[in-house]
Length: 455
Image (cartoon, rainbow, N blue to C red; front, side, top):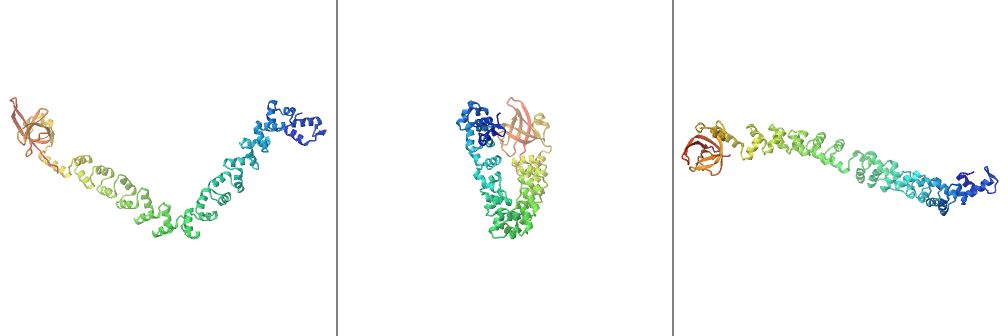
């Protein structure tokens, strides 16, 4: 018969060799079992360990049953098995530590714990020596890691955690010089660490300071100067107004709701007051302000009955609300008014010019092409927009002009004839006759230049 490894080992160390029958085994079976437990070839063969492998295990000092134990446990390298054996492990007890990637001597240190516990602490960065005091105060590896990272001892960490503080909270209170118990008392009332410290440094007891939860002593002094009762000051603070901010809104006569609305729309207190005085709501004011209008400008445009879009058009050409109103009432669009303004004309000048031409040319000013197409005798009294260069200067103020081989007579009144190309308006007063170089009689329109100066 071939006995299991454990039974063979037990027989090897516990059974008297001379017994005739032990637990159902004959003397011959026991003798063979002793041989199996030794280091002879028969023992190795009975454990199924081939001769080629036996030598490696023997060199490491293993008996057949020991080698079989490690091999059957999954540790088949003799050198590795030797390290586990020297650390006090059998194949069976070494296997879970081996699979968890522990070093044999490291595993020996953790031996009083189960593998899962040891692995958790090792993963958290603890040796068994470092972990022991944290385990003693019943903290988990992750908790211990957080507290240790924040430089708490195990005992202090346990004290803070037992009271209910997280690591970050405990750090903040510790920095302000509070013990866990004292910190819990101030936090329970509603104070932050810095607020609690400010009151504590002033020597104010918690029972007195509790009337001003959320405020520092300096803030309380500020709010008292604003003459706000405790409840009102809390409302302003809850709405994220500092005392100085609230002061500016209160002094400019805003209640909390209005102040919050104007502030959220992007206004300071003084700006908001000027817009509200100009009768703008905060949302309407925001639109005008974003279009680069001041409250005063916006009010003026609005009073002149301009909405934002038209105000932007007129202000773009540099006109005030009053000027824009005058141009608009005179029938000009922003574009037309801008063209006249850029040419240097005032509205009064444009009006005078129009009146002048209406008087001189009641039927308007026609295109030069109409003059070319007409009989010179049929255009008397009509006005034309003309251009051309001097063909022959007749006197200081008169000359024959031509354009594209067509001639006409121009009288500049009291102005001298220009040698440059002329462009302007003129009125036909008759015809002008002259003899050309070829000796032929020529009849051309005779026009007086209509001069008008900018005003």
